[in-house]
Length: 330
Image 1 (cartoon, rainbow, N blue to C red):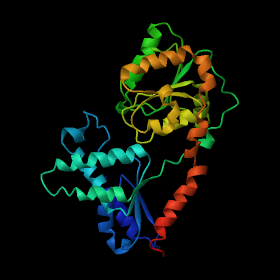
Image 2: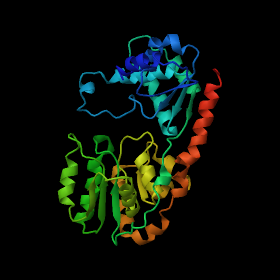
Image 3: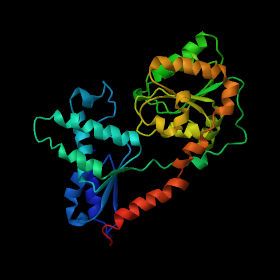
Image 4: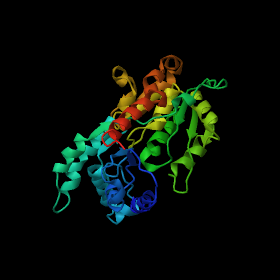
């Protein structure tokens, strides 16, 4: 986020053609980029896609940037990027709302030149453009039969913001009560992955079907289709791609009523899948595991999340980009 704008501006200045639209991500310092490449960006429409932001992202207390009070700087880059962009796309309604709602408090912590009027400008030029996904590639494999027991799934990053301790604590409790289940844990172990993953690998070794990275996309799809229940404990998700993938493969989601998750379930079914407090997770999970036979007949929201497939969203992206590019035709 510091050096990228410098490097990209240098590369852009060497191009021998002029684009119709510049599309950036929230990881680029757009204001700096435009300043450094101003001789070739004048009058050119530029849009930024916010897949995440550094103001409402839950920073780890152990992060060096928090300790040295540098975390605000990344959030400010996001803010000036939004101001400098001609248009802003957010990947979910939750993301757009949380970013705009956080800006007044974020800016008021600075001693002067807060310029809160800029928030209205960010709001005016922003819209929702959901994350496009290759969901059609997750077709049901021929060999993806279910186990007799309910099979639980983890298919997220192995990091603190996904609250793995809460997830595995619920599973330890199931085992202590003698309730049978199976477990699929997908993802890659990094050097600083939370210790709870190694603890769970030993404590739940009798329940584990798979633990670790899938060898390829076909194996990943097969494991998703083998799973029955997706208990989610995450404290951060601006969209939730892994959750959408699991729902598409007919996993029964148990989700916290926060972040972008309510957007992925039909409103009329929220009461079946959403929980308000952490202590509500276990009773909901226990009920689902014990009623697995009936649940397997109900877990079918593939049609609801299919709207995120590129076959549906690509025309929406085309429409949005063509409309912006038309503002300054080459």
